[in-house]
Length: 285
Length: 122
Image (tube, rainbow over all chains, first blue to last red; front, side, top):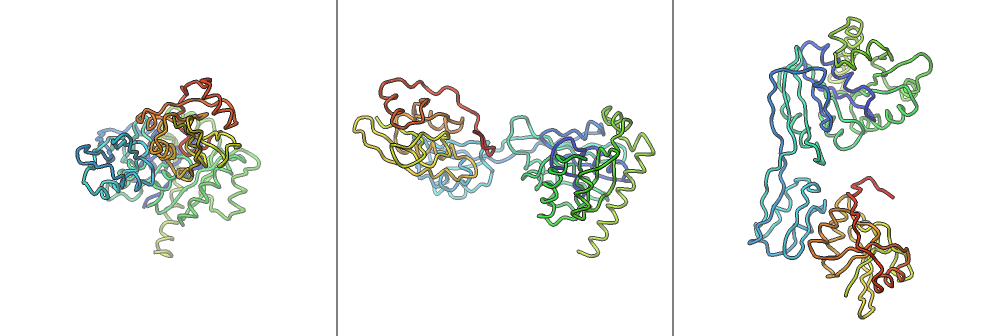
């Protein structure tokens, strides 16, 4: 089963939750889809890394064949093409690699070239297969990297944890598209509630079964918890705002591998998720 | 010579639009014949690449200079490929802008911004 971990902003604890859940599972995959700044590997320090480049297709024109009809320019919904002084200009970073211009060119003047935009790395850390999507600095969209990562998930693992990019934009939609379950990580502030609501609306739009993990919990009122109660959202667990956990995390250690207390906490969350997904497949096959 | 200005409305009394790519209209003005034409900007509602599409319109109308308060880098690339000169407007009034250009008081637009790309910007 694929479990996506998301939040409305960065720094709420997506990586903490997904790294620890993946580590506590018997045999699992951790997939870092936060391709602009993947950081799960800092905790796992995976070994035996294999990497595969990811490229996209960008059109280019053969000036000898192009007769300036501009069918390609008119077709491009993204306005990635311009025709100036009898030459076609292609804006690589605006192009969405749909290939439409190539199909529509009556003169067969357009072809596609590969452009490398990043890579996917696969390695192993104890019981976890670690997959890291990396977008090259300066590239505009990491979606092709996420698509590639999700397409090649190794078979035979019970759990795949998808550590999503922050927010609720296209890149997050791509990450949760095939997920069986979504875990929303929330901070105990009004701002945290606002961000939680963004991803809550997203998973509802995608009709994904979901639950919340309350992170950085303190004594007293928790606006995010109140939000969950009002919306009748299940709470998987509460992670305390705790010095020991913070220290482990800032030393890039995986808490469930260090301390039984955290092992128990994340095990019980995983238990609930597994039961919920089983329940979903029975009632909603 | 023909010049282009992004404008808020189809009138010489209107003001210069702050956005080149997302302006509602362009004024195409002939400094010799004093003739003016207003064009709809077909790029105004584009999801992305508005500057490129808008620049294509300006190129196709064979203007020699664009007078604009701002211009993004993609649009500037298209305009420069067509050897169109970019001048920075300082006044909101279209008429004053035309007068300033005729008097040689407008300077070339040097600060090309990297574009807003879906993030608005004021």
